[in-house]
Image (cartoon, rainbow, N blue to C red; front, side):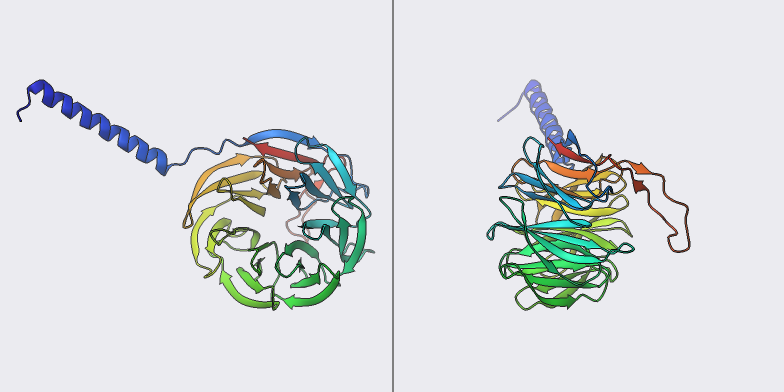
Length: 363
């Protein structure tokens, strides 16, 4: 078939335009769009009953629509939808984390405090419906900090930083089963829902894999290029761990069966929490510097960086509401850091009483 000059020109123009559209589409796919997350609400809370403004982890019970916020000598419970205060769990010393066991109707709080004249290292148990304290279990381990519920064994694991171990508690009987020596300072854990527990070890720069059925260490995996690994979360479906390190400052994507590091990205200073939203495939990483790094899991082997959002200084912990996909963080106003000493060469700013607040980010 013969073509006229006009026909050849039209075909050529079509091919050029098609090629341009193809390349534009390719580049659009290779560079993910921004997350769309922004500040929705700031929830100011009154001073803690103890007068201090120490704060640590945030935990969310998406089914019950409750947000548990550690706040000195109390855990403040917010309504996850209207952000009102639904209640408080009081009478604590220095609370850190909350683990929810919905199948047992119980919640568990790590209450660890070793200030001068105070030495309390225990797990406080409360009723999920009434928020009333129903029992306590002493760990006897220093710096009883992070906590997680392992549903297969129905065991609670606390991670005791200064004692370099994990305390295993029978959540039904409310008794200590054993302590697992983790050979180095420990930090935040994750569970796969199938009987494995994982924990960061910032002293050894690795992730420890623990068999919850036998309470034994199955493997240790290096987190390089991330160092001083602190925050941890998991994509259970694809068996991927996400660990955030403070020095060098990276977040890594790791195979939860082999320990292979698949990807890594630099992050800001003072990471303390990660959380993964399986419905959206988004990973959220919060740091003390006041940044929320957001990534998307494009495939089980590919993590893409979406953006880093400026939050507020001190907003170092977070958790995602799996129903609304909103992200909850907590922080306060701060006084200038004290003068450096030999014992504390790099002091951090201290919180100002009455300035504690929760930040809610969403799309």
